[in-house]
Amino acid sequence: MKTELEKCLAGEPFNGGDPELAAMALNAKRLTKQLNETDPGDRAARLAILRRMLGRIGRNVHVDIDFHCEYGKHILIGDRVIINMNCTFVDNNIIEIGNNVLIASNVQIYTATHFTRYAERTLPDTGLDDDEFCVTYAKPVKICDGAWLGGGVVVLPGVTIGHNSVIGAGSVVTRSVPDNCVAVGNPCRVIKTIDNGE
Image (cartoon, rainbow, N blue to C red; front, side, top):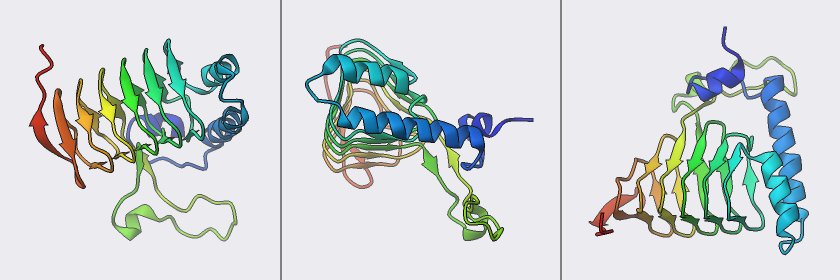
């Protein structure tokens, strides 16, 4: 029988109130609080916290102030990555960020979602104040090498942003974006391809 964490990572409905998941989330919140209270100029201290919080962090990674995440351990970051201020990564499932990626301020990446039908997304009321009352499932997100996400971009569950692609500021990415293109809007659409000499 699968644990709630295994269900979560398999994209199946899971109980977010499960003790293992709740402990992961609490640990991530404590570490993000430490990170966000650490002097932005103290790169060594911030990196030490990030190494404890994230599943993987490569070399020359800069995570700016006011960063937030769900579990932390499901965030995998490559080399030479900038995550600008006030970004939120809801990493119930894996968020994989490649090398040479730029993520602007106020970007939100979501892996968690719920069913649209009320009866499917809501559990019966147990009468307890701390019971889990919604059904959640999560799909991984991948940001490939060389991508650039503009300010305020929202990336939804299950999306892949292709190699070297650019997502315009304020876009809501509901579907995967291919390599070497510019995509903008809500919902985000490809408006041109980029000749990256490949």
